[in-house]
Length: 116
Image 1 (cartoon, one colour):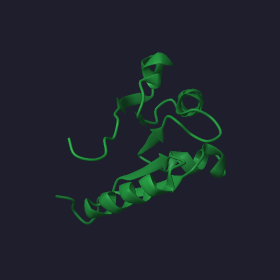
Image 2 (cartoon, rainbow, N blue to C red):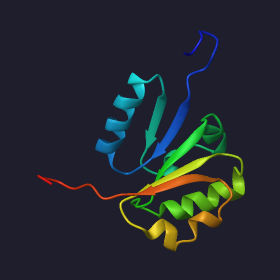
Image 3 (cartoon, rainbow, N blue to C red):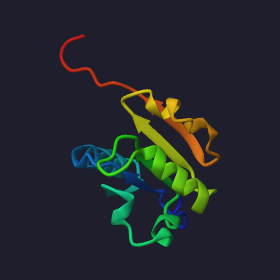
């Protein structure tokens, strides 16, 4: 249980799917976590705006670059910032994602629609 002096966790979600971002924000709010969503790292003013977050949640498939490119950039400029990559493919593994020191974890999954 969080006491009143503890700061709520705050995560940055970089994902070009705004609907997914809204879902994550809605759930996160129910468990006392703040999530800020941006479609691209280019939407941020500077690195200081990323330092304010406890961790970065990162989609692999972005409109203007891959999540791996973003993770590489963060690994150089914010080496101690934890990054969690999410993808519906195994491309993060193919891109040597595990070789970046800031990657706290990653998940590849496929959503299935309809009856199982």
